[in-house]
Image (cartoon, rainbow, N blue to C red; front, side, top):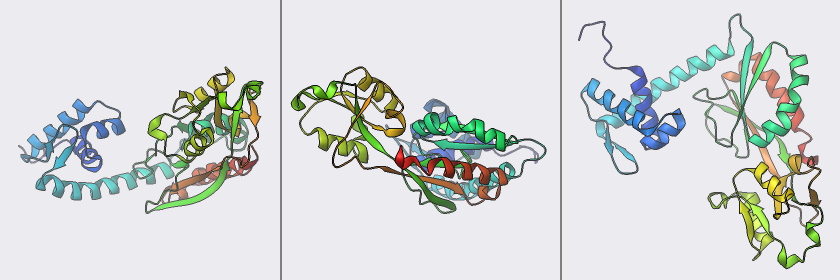
Amino acid sequence: MSKNENLFDWQDLHFFLATARLGSFTAAAAEMGVDHATVGRRVARLELSIGRKLVVRLPRSTQLTKDGQDLAKVGQAMEGQANAIVRHLQCHPHGVPATVTVSALPILSAFLIAPSLPDFAKTHPEIQMVLSATSAVASLERAEADIAIGFVRPTLPGRVVRQIGELSLGLYARDGYIDEQLDRWMFIGFESSLDDIPQQRWLAEFAADRPFALRTNDVVTQAQGARSGLGIALLPRLLGDADSGLVNLKTLPEPPARKLWMSVHGDVRQSAAVRAVMTHLIEICADLSGK
């Protein structure tokens, strides 16, 4: 190997660090948007390049060797610095319109943020907002988004976090459905992997022994099921109140609202464009409790 030849491909190290952090090729592949075979191949190439065994391949996970643990410790520090550089460059664009990426729940992206963008564009034509509509937790540290909004309050160091509103919920069904006898009511809720989220726990308690006609992880699908007369769904009022095919079933006690948390990395917050988007998001979320 000549002096000018790299010891290894830095992208291979990136794949290894994701595997070390997440504990499996499959999890690393999901995060990086590739298949698990690609991750395994890139890690194997890194091992060949440096002449050291880094991971032990198990059926459903990976385990780091001693060399793997040592490299992960050093590599993670390097990755953190690289991510800080990316955040810095994003906060200080040169000669191009600013782009701010917001990771938000699909229901907020579709029914709250997107409809507000025309007004935002009039006030800030120099800023392009990118909406990443996902229920997954975005990594601000790896610059997957500049701003994140979700139900869970982040606790990672370096983030600035504040509550910006509450998402009110209500029971909805097709008009006339509640005329059915109470013991014949059926329900629409989340799939079993989401049984522990607060709204599904509340709905399961309310349903008692009555059956679920549909389980899905998509609230728009839940709303369509309720609209068709399949059963009763617990929906964000932001969605349910806007659907003329649904009626709100008033209940006591009312379903608990979900707090909305906005977080931004301290480095990114210095950007004037990011601050403008944050202000806009705070304003449109402020009155959500009444919707």
